[in-house]
Length: 108
Image 1 (tube, rainbow, N blue to C red):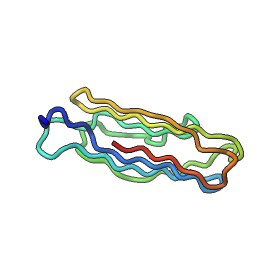
Image 2 (cartoon, rainbow, N blue to C red; image 1 turned 60 degrees about the vertical axis):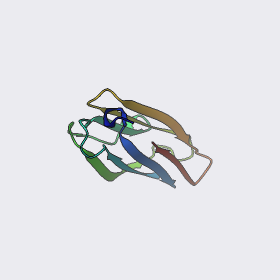
Image 3 (cartoon, one colour; image 1 turned 30 degrees about the vertical axis):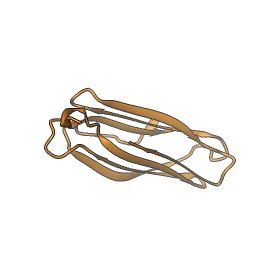
Image 4 (tube, rainbow, N blue to C red; image 1 turned 90 degrees about the horizontal axis):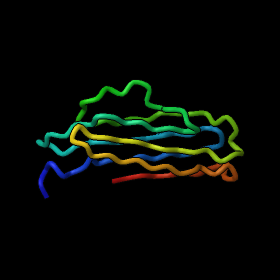
């Protein structure tokens, strides 16, 4: 596989604990390749948790927290990533309000 065809490697996890959601993320591009992370967004209940992403990074890791407006209702979670070479990934899911503890995980 040509290094230009290799996407961004990512692992994103949303963990619900009562009314708090912890979102952790670990993104990286292949060493020596031309691709950089062009954009990254994670959202809970439609709120972007990455307030000031700076494009052009080769790796990005961290954790963000969000307090649910109503923990007894389902809460949507989503992510979106793009590279400087045109590669993209995005997905969404739901943290269930009926569960005190719930999680969603995305990787690629």
